[in-house]
Image (cartoon, rainbow, N blue to C red):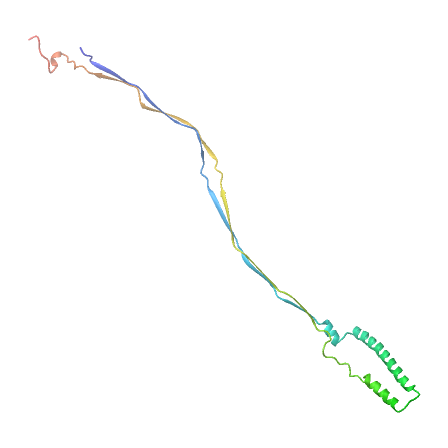
Length: 200
């Protein structure tokens, strides 16, 4: 006689999911600052400098009071020396014991020879030229281009700790499956469709 039931057991099914702990950088931003330093063009020039010193030239044409006094004193002394010499020569002629008519002519010739009647001292041309000097000019050109400055600022990236995780997943719960594999029981037995009466 074969068994009427079958018993089947289904074991439990468990799945483990683990996640390791880790450090992850958080989101960060960066900033770029750009600045410009303006350049420029600078031109510095100095013209030629001309120096004209006319002091000595003007002094020779129109001397100052001090210069006139010094000149007059010097000319007076020179005139006194010349007059003394002239009178000495004339006296020598007059003291000559052989004085004749030629003596006066000699004195006249002597005075004319010494240019006693001089032309007045009128000057229009300076005795000293003007002192002229010059300094060369100069030109300096300075050109600077624009400067572009970059400043890159990056924020620090702090690390974020992600803890580990263990996950239990039950894929199949345990169970017992009972299956009836026998024929149905009819009460009374004559109710069975394939019942055969053996007593007849």
